[in-house]
Image (cartoon, rainbow, N blue to C red; front, top):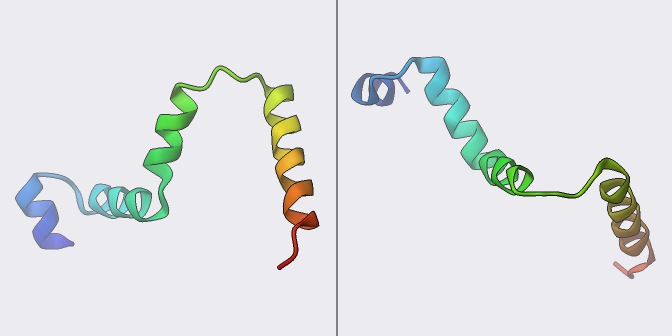
Length: 59
């Protein structure tokens, strides 16, 4: 981490945050949300529908 920070000119905490965001897929979520035009009610309805579907499918 210290080497990466020194090589990139970033702080250690920034290197850690970038790694976590990348590994957890948060950057991808941010990109998706930035282009989304769905309002909160539509998003909630979609989330509930996905939840119901996942409960109905056999595991």
